[in-house]
Image (cartoon, rainbow, N blue to C red; front, side):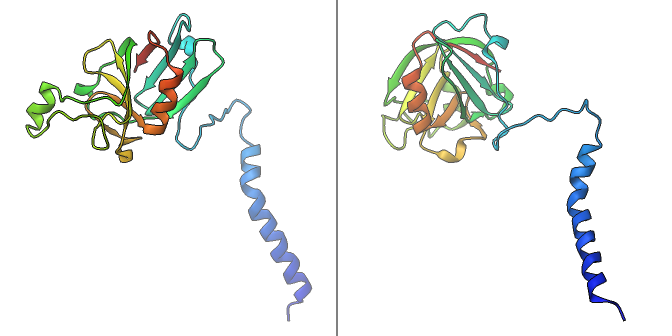
Length: 188
């Protein structure tokens, strides 16, 4: 008959070995292995210096791959990351450098000719809950491209726009207050 005392010890040692195995495996990896840490949304921190020569009035980088917008204030004291919606297709995506030329609380919306071509039912919408631009909009110096809010929160984190960068309404309100006219923008 098996001694219960030895059975308990064997089970205890087996359990400890099983729990320690992942740590031991990591400890035996070569020292050159580096771990890239990311937050739950997979946003990688950016450096404004990798995109612009100076901060100027501030800087915005919209990263289509991670679906994140990065903001730096002109004094360099503030760095915020916001989840975004991005264009649905490469044909709708414009990439490059631009700037904020106008800001508006309670924007109205007029569909572009290409939007109407795809969906003839689209019509002008005044500010309000059904407006696709949400509560705030910041206009780029490219016609019909904006950074704006959205009432449809399902769009954030997805390829869902016709070219614009969309944020949750409470996030665009925060960004709107921080951003000056003339802030440089890079979409990539």
